[in-house]
Image (cartoon, rainbow over all chains, first blue to last red; front, side):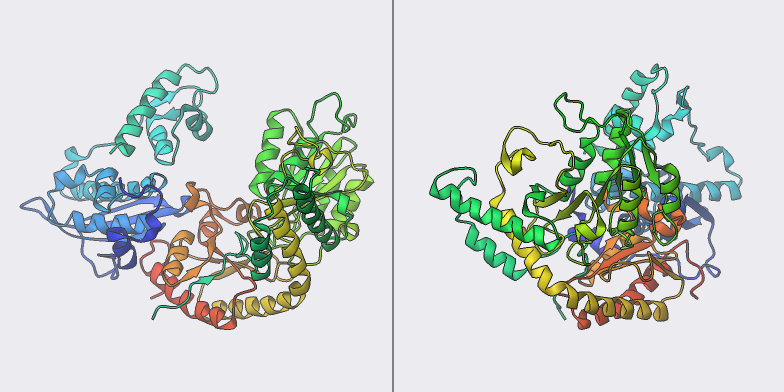
Length: 204
Length: 395
């Protein structure tokens, strides 16, 4: 990962996509789409809308438009994602990871990785919407959350989210989620998940 | 056209005043330890004590009431640590008086330290603020008791610039026999600060917010006030703060307050005019904006504003690309997605707090820079709103 803490030098692709975002949705009413996904919440600081057009015979995304409320990394990563998916098979697009998006941008600092998470989520939501509209519900993968900490009701998804937000140690994880602060039984599993998510999102 | 970069983030830090720089350059060769008895030491000691006098007189204090510290944060930590000192010799054994009253809009160095005290069993109360950022005095009156050891309220807020009535707060604290501290880091050098008018027992100030160097702060401790050092192991600062004096920083701070005394009056008027102009321009050119903080009882240099549907960090970075440096009300850039605790404490909903920026002006800003900012800002907001999911009005 290049320049871990200095994306604000505006180098390369990130700068380009931040300054001149591609495929921004300007004609919200007039744009005909095949799938629509909206994720996030402005209360939490970011929200993203993604619309896709699909070649139904080839199962290929032929166009993509978006809008976002969020920080510079969110804007740049959504912009580059919208370029990446054009011409991409639905199956492949469905499994794009934040890491791949960050890589395409030339790297994001660790504390900004979470900004790129929303993009791939919005894209998946749009593809799910497309599947639902076209009788292919069986292809929709429900992200099932399972509870790790029974006492505080903390799920694996919440742990993953906390890791993306910057938790690097079990202590930081507990600060954010309060997991394992009652009986402590879940700590070994939480530590294992922490390692997994760290590897998934931050190892190069 | 490549223009000069415009710095409008003076509440974060300030550039060195040219006069401060000059004096510091001269002092760089003074290396003696001020505690040494020989000539090298004595010449350093003389500079340190001269600076102490300058700092003291700037806030209406006596020289021996000033302790130099490594930062404003250290000074604040020192004050709060006094209450929980459990050493037997501590002069501060004040019976049951260990409760702390502070506010929800303090700087993190007060908030975090207070939370840490809480974990160590101290009773801490965080006063609420109203929508203009004024700390709730009635709540203070209702909370304070014979158990309150210290009331610590910041004089001027770093994010929204609201100025508190410290004198009134000190009177209430003293009425109940508690001590009063004010973190005046953002106030000193911008508005008149006199410890005897404010009647505070402790006051914190910092060098780098007033065109002095970084790494130097000062704590005023009123004569006769119980005290206990945070950093031990040396007789420096009359045994109140161990560690060899930062001669260079101290000299810089001494000069900085001298220059402030000369310049701050005129500058206040100039910056107030700039702020009002900028406010008017923003109001006229950009729909759906709100100004945060108190309309009159606030720092002339600080303008905090929220834009519906535009995220603060994005505004900051587009402005940066245009050569204008401001800051966000939110801590997003520092790794957290949480919006500003100050704005939230004023009752602002999170989505609006996310869309806030702080413009803090200073002595080198010119009218031309203000006009340029007033011209660029509407373009930036428009651009962001066009791609925002949270702004649909502008069509």
